[in-house]
Length: 287
Image (tube, rainbow, N blue to C red; front, top):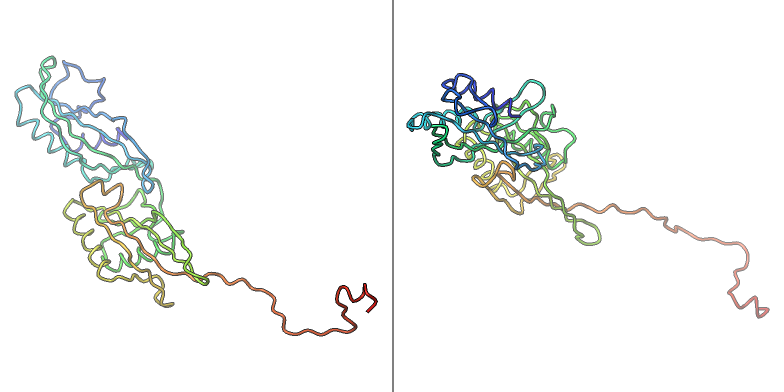
């Protein structure tokens, strides 16, 4: 992962002339400016992507070069934030900016530096586009969203391929609950999450708002129109700024009643007998 990031920084921050190092490589004598890439220990599984980790990029400049560290920090952010980075061998990540630290003066190295933080999402390898082997409700949401957004947008269900292009939308099933609704039906509730991948933060927000507005106004989402089957929207939450890439920009609860399967049993259509039927006790008493 760090090699992918290193190459993106070499290409996106030409002022460092390829000087992008691991933490243990740079020394006090290393020519400035240069960048240090550090991968932190934090990482956790993300069900739709694979795993999430954190990286820090530290630009090192001459001690009095305040404007240079500002410029490099901006270029670092532009080179990595919301970018899809791949190595051509199946590994792919997306970097999301997570703020900057304060300037730090390193008197021993005669350098000024600043931490530029990102978290990274590693996309699991899959080449499936659109709806395939998904929950039928997720498939229906993919079709509904594609019709809403139109051409120029990729909409996926379940997993997003490593070759995805922004703008894109991912719907995935998050949870399922089935409760008894009487003798003949079940009440099925499904929690779904929607992730939006824009080319920038404004586009990402606009897509999420558009989907949420239309979903909220419709109340019922088509499941199978030909059979007049619909999903009912029970709840909808929109999260634009709080770790929405992991949890989902939209989280919805959909429901519908499903008929219970009726067990087939043998029915007595008629009865006939030849001979004498005795009650127990009659035979014993000689009757």
